[in-house]
Image 1 (cartoon, rainbow, N blue to C red):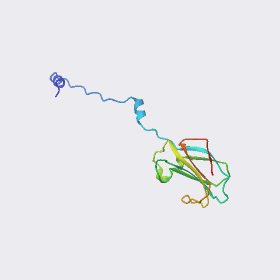
Image 2 (cartoon, one colour):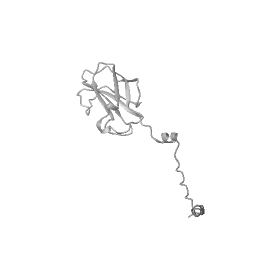
Image 3 (cartoon, helix red, strand yellow):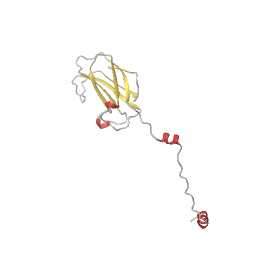
Image 4 (tube, rainbow, N blue to C red):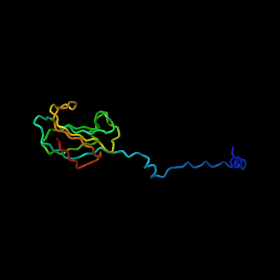
Length: 141
């Protein structure tokens, strides 16, 4: 035991517990990671494709290969058309995953309506955007 503790015990006093350091409230907020929100909106333009059945709009995490975080199937026109993609459009296996601050937004016309196949020459566009961007403009080429 240290001499200070022995002295306190000898005098009949219990040593006061040392106060535990608590971080300032703003320090705690800075340590917590900011969680991005998926809330995209904009307009899609295309001359279209007569053979297109649907338009697929999706968002991927650029740092993770695999399926998209969110996806939506829309009619293939008429263009221009407005779109939104939010957390409500997240696919079941992506729910609970954090949304990165920047995402890959893709829109593509599809002739067979099957999201897993891609026909050559169908108009599409992919771009990196903030996960909460509004006023986006995509032109399918």
